[in-house]
Length: 180
Image (tube, rainbow, N blue to C red):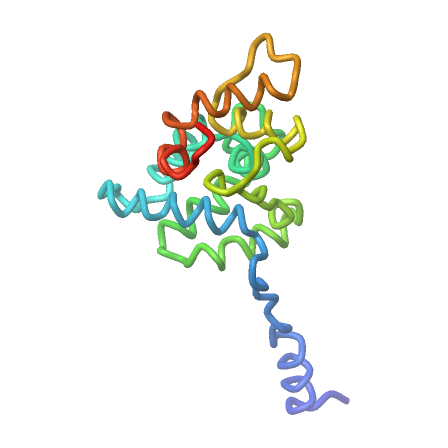
């Protein structure tokens, strides 16, 4: 025969949530950074904090993303070619001002790929020796700037193009460099 005290203990064990998996330092870097900037832009633009408006703003923000930010948008379903739609897992909590770290924790449980995204290490263009970089890295610099090097065949061509564009895309680095 079951007693109420035994039943209540069993219910308490079932209903008590397990340990909360909080994010470790640096985990979900792209998610936390992107959503943090997005949330700040919402506050700055005095947007109504309702889920539908936030969702529209998020879709708009994801249109122009590149690199890891675009991959994050794809994973949550905020790009036109996305296979899944988890955008409401972002817009609804943001409408209640849930911290972005908590949103990313929840997204991690739904799709672990989201928290595996990391930004590429940025080169310090003021001190890096361009001649010692691989062509792949030189191409990456140009790609990050939204530029290309048509007709470049040699490593020196890529270096010349980067140095030429540096005042436009990295003016502080251009001023600090002596080889320009």
